Image (cartoon, rainbow, N blue to C red; front, side, top):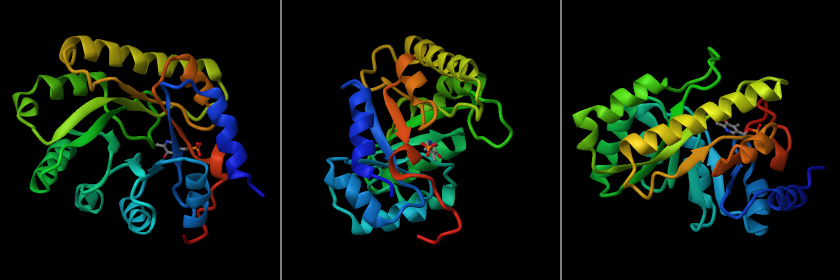
Length: 227
Ligand SMILES: *Cc1c(COP(=O)(O)O)cnc(C)c1O
């Protein structure tokens, strides 16, 4: 049996006050989320738009929903009304579409740019060059219904912890450069989202502000089971 409460309490002991714990609840049933909720957890991460919408509908309204997966433009509608942060903006086209839909709802949607730090084929994310192109674009300056709060990255799947550390340092450096160049007067550009169950300790050492922990809280995921 997975002890969700013990897992959350154990993780909370390890993370400093300025770091935000995101309980990654993808594929997990409502009862598991409620267990975490009852230990005071209010921030949940999901990677499928419809699944997040379904959970948002039935769960308490003081939960903050963070979207952490690859977002298709035609799925923005499932989350745009309530999402509190989209971690995974990986193209200018997607950002513009989020802005457009947020405008219709009279909302400002908080976003992070997802950076490619692992260089693995299967992962999404942008190069630092692409990011610079977006931020220097006049069109970007005109978007009023998105707010860029920082950068996100997913480390390589590897046993080599020094490799992971290198990737997290690279992300931190991109964040610092980007802050100095484009966001020095923007108080809200202050977040780095890196670190999952297997590598959040390294992310904490490298001064992340969000950790995204799934299996370390809820146990292994079983993708064969329908939620
Ligand atoms: C699934 C997922 C996580 C959590 O992974 P665990 O290894 O279960 O902690 C974190 N970030 C992203 C983007 C994910 O898709």
